Amino acid sequence: MEYTVYLAGPIQGLSYAKAMGWRDLVTEVLPRHIRTLNPMRGKEYLAGEEIITGLTADGSVVRRDLWDIQRCDLMLVSFMDAERVGIGTCVEMGYAKGLGKPIVVAMEPDNIHNYAFITELGEVVDNLTLAMAVIEAMLSA
Image 1: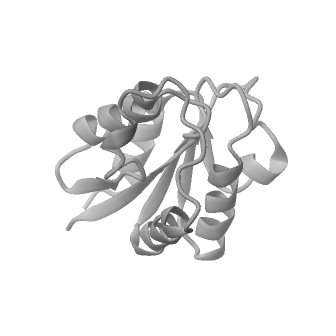
Image 2 (image 1 turned 60 degrees about the horizontal axis):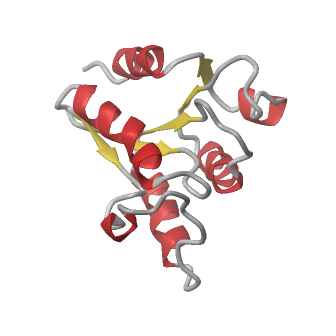
């Protein structure tokens, strides 16, 4: 059986390389039966950006991301090394929870997102390696 994981995490304020780095790693490491939905897909035009600012004013980014959340089996959130609150990611988490989607969150104990409205929405672990292990265990056929 195939499963789909939505890769949520801050984008705005990061470099393209940092926003893509962990997403590429997760996509590469997870087994073949677990495919990923990357909200950075189609945004290669940002490849040279050192600081990503607003993505679009027409709402298409939000619509596509929410649709991805509707069709995923599980959400992986990486707040690793976050320097500022990821407002969009927090909204995505609430939306996923409202849909009954399981959520796995990777963040350090002293992370700026370590707050009850985040930590009580899903399984929280302190690194991406453990997050991927949890996902594999949850989505084992």
